[in-house]
Length: 544
Image 1 (cartoon, helix red, strand yellow):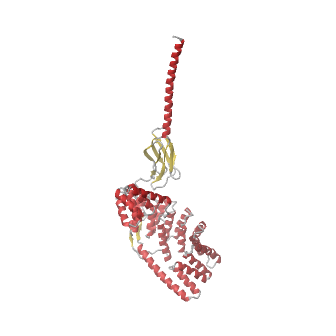
Image 2 (spheres, one colour):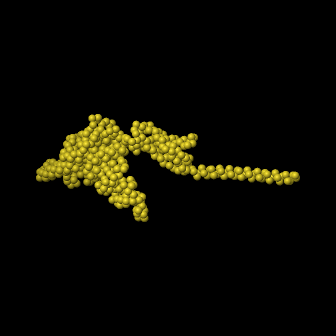
Image 3 (cartoon, helix red, strand yellow):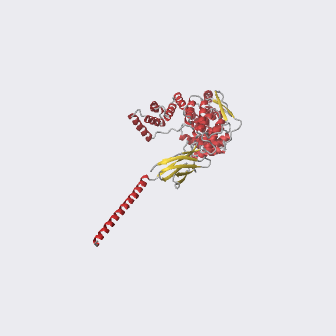
């Protein structure tokens, strides 16, 4: 074999070997690229969510462990102060989530699949370690029972008629704290409403379109408009719980209470939910059945002890003259929701109705300390002080803070002026100057503030300036002709000014107002039916 032939054969074999190696290398490179592409396509996934307790409150500091089938893959996280957690950058796969927190029973979530590039959200509800998931967490057992209601013409109460009136007005104002604030519709909500109307017009027989439009109209404060679409959705699918509930709510908000009750009671046969009991409680109160109302409020709070449900239960008890049970409910609600200003206000109103003025002041002052900018506690303190002769230093300090934080509030200036005036000496010029300045500012901020004009008149009378006093009293009565004290004080001022005929006329008007007021109060007392309740032998724990 010639050397050239040997060289040719060797060259052919080398080329063949090199081609095979290149092919193997190319395949290997393709596998690497495909693997990388696959890894990139699958990308990182994530798992996040929130942890709550059985009452819906966020649970911070929960230790979470996420384990996969691969024993080498285990991840840890911890909920933040808002109860949120996150496991970022997870490979796709099947995982088991474990949650553990002090005072709560450990929890293992059933296996969950997280797909490629999936951002999955899983919320957890932990049960208290000393409770079972089937038993609600409110009272072990309420220390009172409401046996019935009675019509009464003389509800009585501690102290004078002024205190009884103040007690009743505080009960009504406490109940009004449970009303949802009315907010103007935003352009976004109106745009969403128009868009959903277009969807319904295109497909009138679409259940989802009708329900969603009805739900939005209901949330936008248009219950009667919502009824058209919710009723149509009900005809299309009568078995949908959420639409049926919204239909009952729309009827209730629209004043169709009997229809609302019928729908809600029908739903209750298959769904024993807290929201249904709460709705039935609202409806029963509107229909004049407070006993049924308070029982539904209690059941709603038992099923789900939310702040809103507990507050409405306590307010219903207070409104119908059951201050001791109301105080128990508000106190428990304040324990469960320590940042709730209105729970403390409710405790204060209940304590006041029970005749415990010092406790009432303490609770409401605590509410003002939770959120100093919130005006409601100061307004309650201001109303309470009208019925008391002597001002406590604590009330004066809080009302001073009120006017400091809200210098352009007519009520803040007025209530602090009254407190300063009551705490000083009537003949002391120095103690009269500051309240006069505050009251003058109050009427400049609100010229129709009749009570402020009355108080300015009282200050002028304390100085012996009866002409100025009479002028302020006249202005107050022009704004509020039914003001009993205004007529009485104006009569005294006219007498001092040597105008006996005018004084006698004001006294006649005063007597007339007193009789009309007594008749009106009597009628209101007939309309408010009083709970008949009993307290158990074991006294309720006093709140701290």
